[in-house]
Length: 339
Image 1 (cartoon, helix red, strand yellow):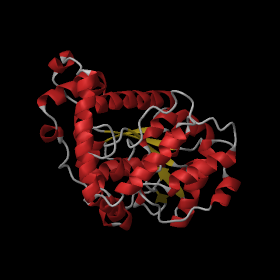
Image 2: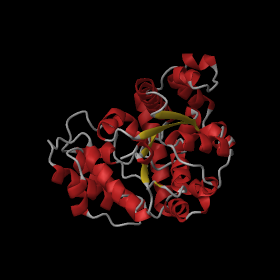
Image 3: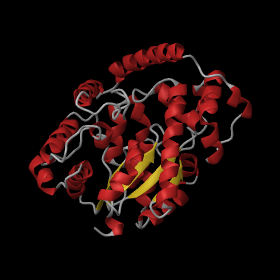
Image 4: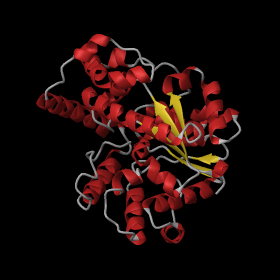
């Protein structure tokens, strides 16, 4: 595979605009980026010991119960024939079938959790390129409070954001800017043509005007129709959600986020109140109870509004069964916390 045909992976933290970036890339005539079943997120802790058939079986099970159904049927036998002796090989074979069905030259993946697997991906796919998408953690936390995917408590979201930015920065330092490219959400929506052109230069593709009108495509409309948490996928690029934390977080929640994320915020040029560094951490019981209350409210709304609500429950049950086979400590996030 030539470098210009290598896969493009979006890494970082959920609720950072990854659906927007996915659909912008997907609007390019040479790139196909389906909504991800998060294969490595859920399967990487399972001791397959090189059993490709078992890996393919589990990957196909996740795909079958995916909360965002793919428009193309994936041939299991063809995946087994094409897959290498690793999870990355299986994932690549599945995505490559999707790419062919879409008539594209290369595929992309927006499972931001792949930030934990950069080295593993590059070992199997040396021409892969990574877009490190970062957004103000306060806005990420405000978005997560309303989303049916992800931890609802801002303090927990800040912990995740901080850890994942550290992983992404380490990948950039290890592999360099020719492999990992930083994309700030705020820059992307404020100067979309400039930023998308820079992304195209990084991945070695010509800029296409359709990328500025991603919301007009059928894939964007489908995503927006499935869940209230994805409704903005059908909107044009806008700056309206910059600073969403001013409405979506209380002052205490904002200080809690800043207390956790201060060092990374400083490095990534997000201004904050230095006094927040002294904000005490909330008690574990309070976090759990508040998170549960918000989760129940979000679930109730999802039950009323989301077309894929029951698919998500089935997916979560599948993930639960898979987790029981994982090595201790290798699967860390509860079911229901992926997009």
